[in-house]
Amino acid sequence: MSGDRFASGDEGHALFTDLYELTMLQAYWKEDRQQRAVFSLYFRHLPPARNYALACGLDAALSYLEHLRFTEPEIAQLRSLGFFSEEFLEWLRSFRFTGDVYALAEGTPVFPNEPLLEVVAPLPEAQVAESFAMNQIHLQTVLATKASRVALAAQGRTVVDFGMRRMHGTDAALRGVRAFYVGGVHATSNVLGGLMHDIPVAGTMAHSYIQAHESEAEAFRRFSSLYPQTILLVDTYETIEGVRKVVDLARELGDAFQVRGIRLDSGDLAQLAREARKVLDEAGLERLQIFASGDLDEYRIDEIVRSEAPIGAFGVGTRMGVSRDEPSLDLAYKLTEYAGTGRLKTSPGKASLPGRKQVFRIEENGRSVRDLIGRHDEPQPGRPLLEPVMRDGERLPAGRRTLREARERAAEELAKLPSHVRALEPARPAYTVEVSEALQRDAEAVREKVAR
View 1 (tube, rainbow, N blue to C red):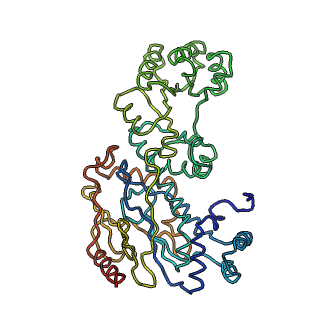
View 2: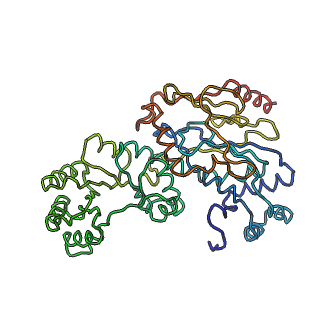
View 3: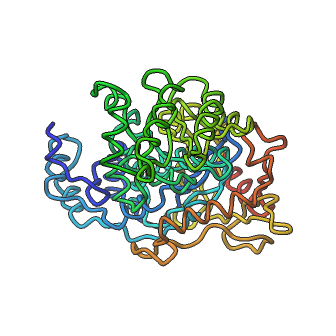
């Protein structure tokens, strides 16, 4: 089916949904089940190699809800499937999201069973939000979490996103740019993503440029004449010989030499950096930075930093771009209340908590020590994390926070976590998340009711 028959962007994704969302929508309409519902979006467990997740993707979810419409071409496509009555399709013409949303601010560390967002709306409206919200919050939360670990491992050194070429499609690469920035990455090689989100773009040069010239020295000379403050890639042939050619170029150009650094992209990066640093320093080029790339992730960066290798910046690609070690969260979007009555699942390993909730973060001396999941209306010590971000289908100020505010929040909130929770190795003990007595009583009462 031709892609140009469908709109693009968050405002044109009404059909980006699972079929059962729409078949349930028609059933709700036919049964007149349109009273207020509450759905919670959360994950049940952290992956083994994660001590926290970093909430991200709310902006895309809210944009989707703001612009949710079924256009005439989309209604025609639904008609062609043969599942839907003309009366239902007519009802869809005026379908809008009119509900409320409560959410964690982007950049907030989040833990198992804590709602990243809760949707409060007439049942059909809350139901249809599931697929897109899960898709975007899952992707961006996974990638922001990975990026935060990479940035923490770099310990203040510059990190550039090089991941777009092996990421899973255009949408992932463009959304990923944003998520990486929230997580602490400084810039991206993805030009469109950088311009879309007003994030710095950065890049060096490819080995093909070197190979396209008769010699490495000629390639360096020509590229630096066009981009005087560039970073030169020195490992196309023999790395340390490449470094020496940079030194030769510096001598040739004298005061006109403005190259900012060299890039290592293969081999033992730490050892090559030491050897390169020695050659550069002996030539009086102490100001040149060493930039490293090539199959990097938080674990390799941590090793390099701990070895005190003289590397000042990292380009991180595939391993961060697809979150290779932990590419998914068991995200769920579950009905927790309908028509004023708590609802839950009791399935083994998938039990849920009823009603609207609040997450309270208890802090001592400016440090986060534990979280408490409670009813939304119960008083508890600690800082409430879920806040209203949309009311009656329109964003509130908390739902319009900027990308830079999300980035700043991530840095501040991560710094408050216990050091062993921020660490790369599994936290022992894990960060504590408790459920309030009132919410436990509510859950037990609902369980007893549904067991009858």
